[in-house]
Image (cartoon, helix red, strand yellow):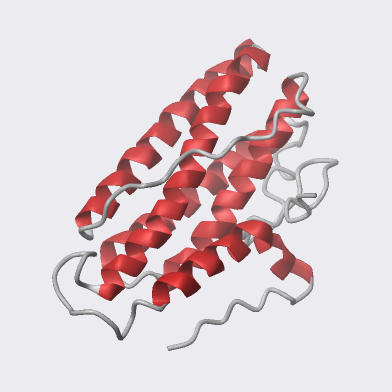
Length: 206
């Protein structure tokens, strides 16, 4: 069983960036389990569920990172956007809880840890919104890539729901960065590659 992780295409394909590349690495490694080991009901004995658990743990790590980032960034936000930041942080906690439940649902163990969001260039509200936009774009791209590669129905549905949630966050973040109503939804289809207002392509994460 093979996996197509060719991300060399130009244009909108670049939007998957490092998030999709990292996901492909997780998927490729987990697919090595397919065809070996006994079939069963949980991730310990069922290679397809083990693959799903690995992908879900990678997603959980992303959400834990975003949860931490929103907590750290709240003091930089003005009163209006601080309320939004609190709401996003609460939703990130819901995402963490849902992924944890999904991992356990396929018989897996949660072993994800939060990454370290790069706050080195974050000095004010605009800087934090740009960082949050990058994290949200990466999450959206990873779920778009993950959904068709999950074997189990419930995790596939969850990935689609999480992609929608992050896409909604990006609309609000664009407005926070100065976009008008039309500019806050600039594309009919967004796979995590649409840059913020006046910003660089989120796939360009140097």
